[in-house]
Image (cartoon, rainbow, N blue to C red; front, side, top):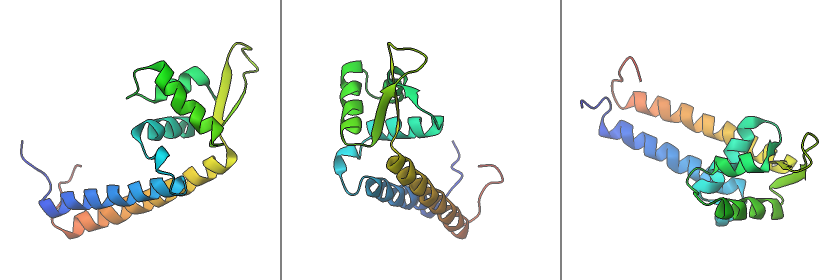
Length: 136
């Protein structure tokens, strides 16, 4: 396979992910307990939905966690810490809904603003390090 980007350009990608990772940790006010792929999948999955989701669907967002029981522990920790809120499902009394707390929604909105900014800076840096293919 012919490589499209030079080493300096690929390093800019790593710089970007480092900055985004630090910003992700800031979302949780330095609490490294939430600095994991499972929480990334959980919170970004719920954020994408932009509405409360069934608890069982939220568990499925954590793709790397194969055990529903383990995924449930992550979910319960997020609820206990006030990052997610749990409510009754008005359409099905047998299930519960979970949603981002208003503060968590705000924190994630700010995080994604910063992440898009990092993406834009990284793009400019990649371009500054040499030619780029017409198609990404």
